[in-house]
View (cartoon, rainbow, N blue to C red):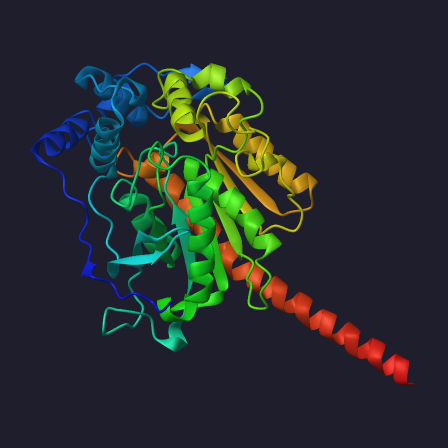
Length: 401
């Protein structure tokens, strides 16, 4: 299907008055990283040999004072509004990019809303699509939110930061959410979004050799599943393998319990009961879905020959251990996997670049690592292809000698 041109430029999402006041309260606590470092007055919180970032702790304390309900304590529609609101408060000032275009792409059963972020410093006078000679890497990004919450606006800050920090195009995709669209709608849409991007890379101004997939939390789950689907292909000559996959504190295993869920399942933003709430909405009643299905728990899938992975976890996150187990499983299967733990941060830190310096620094490190992978992997492929070509030529020469 031809590329649908963007209908409008998407400005940074705006906060209402209440949100602006809450952001001011964070600044008053020193949690926005300014010169007033009052967060140093808060007693250090240590657990499992780690110390929580003081600004992050101040943010959690403010949430408690404001009485924010957990996801599972609200109707779905209210929880979606709460997630979006909190994300915009914690995002801080909008990160500048050259353009952000809202557009539609093809999902598994119909069009999906998406947003294409373009970094500055690239010649593009029409502010539409990149010229042929200046093609950039592109990351297809799937937002988190337990497969129930989240959208382009709730994850606008992380996409802007990855776009500007890595100097890449970022395509943020709104896949269908539960409970309106339970499993497997989300992985079906994620795979469709990947193949749509492959087919339209040139029109998007992207380098087809440097296409990546990524996401946070539930989006990390969809990233892992899509990487496996991409490796299996769709039976076409122009099938493309991702150059890299980025998994930010991913949910990858429903088949077992991990110690980090017991350690950090309460009081560190992502609550144990909220995870169960999301699971019920997404997967239905117990036994309705095989939890060992690789499109539910991608850690059980075929991990051989996948795109190189950057797996980022947070120290104070109930999902920490399963993310690190997935990185180890990838390496055991022969797939390149870089594991990076941010020991002083919590689940969702990618959405909090406006809370202290630490979250932003961590995401800038992620952006740098991702860009490095996107530069190295195509070169490795090219070298491998050249060596294979030389071997074939040698074999043919010996056969005719």
